[in-house]
Amino acid sequence: MQLLTLAQCTAILSFCALNVNGLAAPSPETNALVTRAAGTYNDPHMVDMPCTGMEDVCEADCIAILCHGKDPKMQKLAGTKDQKKRQKEANYRASGAYFVPFDEDAAVMAKRGIARPSPSVPNAPVFNSAEETTYESTQQGGPNCIIFPVPREQQTLQGGNMQNQFGRVDEALNNIPDGQWFQQRFSFLNSDTPHCLALMQTPPDTSICRKEKKNRWGFDMKKFAYVMNQAVTNPRTFKNLFQGYKKKRDDGSWEDDVEEQVEPTPTN
Image 1 (spheres, rainbow, N blue to C red):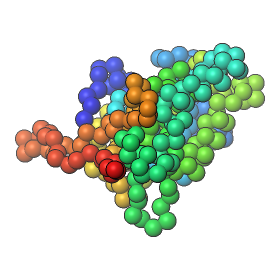
Image 2: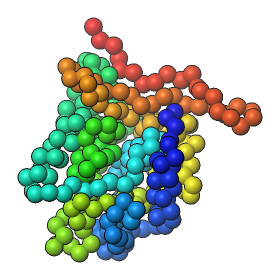
Image 3: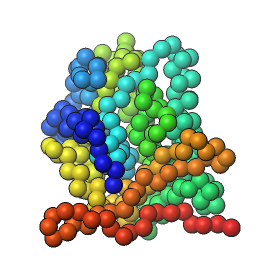
C-alpha cells in the first residue's frame, strides 16, 4: 500500500477538519457552495457532493484521496473560453479517460493492462465509464490522474451537480470563480460509501485501505484504481495501483497479504 507523505496527510486532515459536519445534509440552497471562502489553497471553497444515487462515483473519489494520497483540493481552470476548452480536452486525453478504456472488449482491455468489475449481483449496472478523480476542468487534471470504472448513469448525475456549481459566476453568487480552489464535501453517506465514511472521520481511518471491503455489487472498488502510463502510446496502457491487502499480526503490526492483484485475462 502506498505510504502518504507528510504534506498529503496534512491535506487530508485539513479536508476532514473542514468537513466535521460531512454526514449532514447539504445547504438548503440547491447546488450552492457549502461555504464562502477566499478560494485560495489554504481557504478553498467547499462544494456539495451528495452521494445519493452516485455512491460508486463517491467511493472512487474517496479511495483516491484516502488510500492513494490524492490532494483533496483542486483549482478550477482559468483563461479565455477557448483556452479552458483546449486545456480541458488535453487533460481528458492525458488522464486516459479519452480512450474509454473500460468500455472495450476483453482482448483490448487485456492489452491495455486494465480490467473492469463483473458484478454477480442481479440488475447491477455496467461499470464502463472512467471516473477521473482529479477533474479535467482543473489545473491538476490530466497526467497521473487516478481513474476508476463507474456506471455511466452515476457520472451523468455527478456531472450535472458539478456543472451547476461550476456555472457562470454572474448567474449564481456562490459559484466558483475561475482559478480558485475548492474541495468536495461528501454528504448523504451510508453503508454503501464505507471509504467516504472513513475519510470523513477525524482523523481519517486509513486502515480500511488495507482491508477488503466489498460494495453492494460484490466487489471491492480499491482493486480497480488505474493510472495511464504516459510513456507508452501503442497501445495506451495503464498501471493498476492496488497492491493487495494487509493482515494484522498478533502484536498489532501489519503484514502483506498474499492475495493477488486483479489482472486482465490473457489473450492469444
